[in-house]
Every structure is written in structure tokens, then in C-alpha cells.
Length: 230
Image (tube, rainbow, N blue to C red; front, side, top):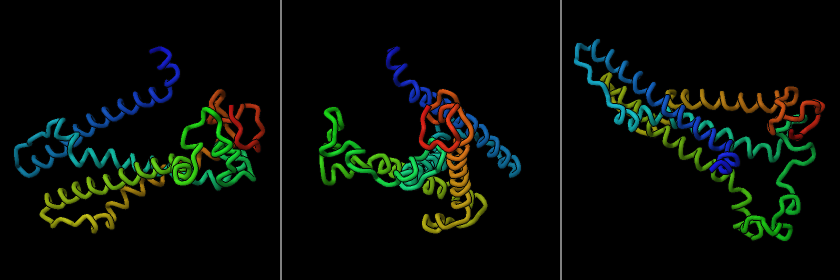
């Protein structure tokens, strides 16, 4: 067990942080939702009926709050993985060396006849299997992004229509909703923050250091050293 914790420490730490943050979001969102509903009921002269915690975490309100952040995170990583194949940032440890743009040769990627004995099975294959495995990270990341973005649109649509009905307005179709300002304002406020964060990391890592981190160059590396690890 100690060996597993040591060797898988990074993923376990982030899993624990994720679950703690998700639980905290659920509790805070539940209280905020009930406070808002209580206020609405009081203003309307009605008796408040608080929503149970179980009902809240299965509601469209909670699902939208979760998925709208997931989709932007996975979009960030999908684009970062793809763009760093073809684009460089001189001096950044997040970039390949200038002149190394592109998908690289089979020899560099250790595929086909250049595969090692312990290489994954599909790295030794050819045709579609090699193509799928060679692009599997982006495929999975993009699939999760598309799924979570669709989930955000459906839950947001449900929440938006519930609010419209509460104000005695007609409901909108899903197609109309995903073209609405409400959907795109929610979507783009997440996208812009993710793009800024990734761009900042790529540029700041040229000049700033974090000793011992693989995301940083060695402390003494010149600023123009590209793709160096600590």
C-alpha cells in the first residue's frame, strides 16, 4: 500500500482534492440554492420548501455548475496537446525545441519497427490501430470535452427553462437555447480563463522557476533554453 501511494501519489492527491472540492461545492451550492428559494417564497408570501441534499445533487442546477467547468478544462488540455505538436514557444519548458514541430518520425516515436520490446502492443502495429493509439490522448480528451459540453447545454437548458416558467415565460427548445446569450456567456467566461491560464504558464515558465518541478526548467537554465526539464 505504501508503495502504491508513493508511486501514484500525484494522481491520488489530485483525486482527493477533486472529491473534497466537489463535496464542498455540493454543500455550498445546496445551501445557496435553498437560501435563494426561501427568499423567493418569502417574497411571494408562500411557505418555503427546502430541497433535500440528495435532490439537489441530482438536479440540473448542480449538474450545470459541475459540467460547465469540466468542459472548459478538457477543452484546455485538448487544445494544448494538439497545438504543442505544431507550435513552439522559445524558452518555455512546455514547448518542443524550435525545428522539431510536427508529428515526428517513427524512430523518434518508437513505433512500428522501431518499437521496443516493452512498447505497448498497438505501438508495434500498423494501419488504423497505430493511428488510433498515436492519437488516443487527444481522442479521449476531446470526447470527454464534447460529452461534458453537451451535458452542460442540456442541464443549462433545463435550468434556464425552469427559471422562465417561474417568471411565467414560455420555454425554449434546446436548439434555440444553445444559440442564446445565456449559454454562450456561461461557456465563454470559462474558456477565456482557461486560455489565459495556459498561455500564462507557457510564457511565465520562460523567466520564472520552481525548483524540483518537471513543469519548470532547472533554476540555473538560461531564459532561452527550450523544452528543458528539472
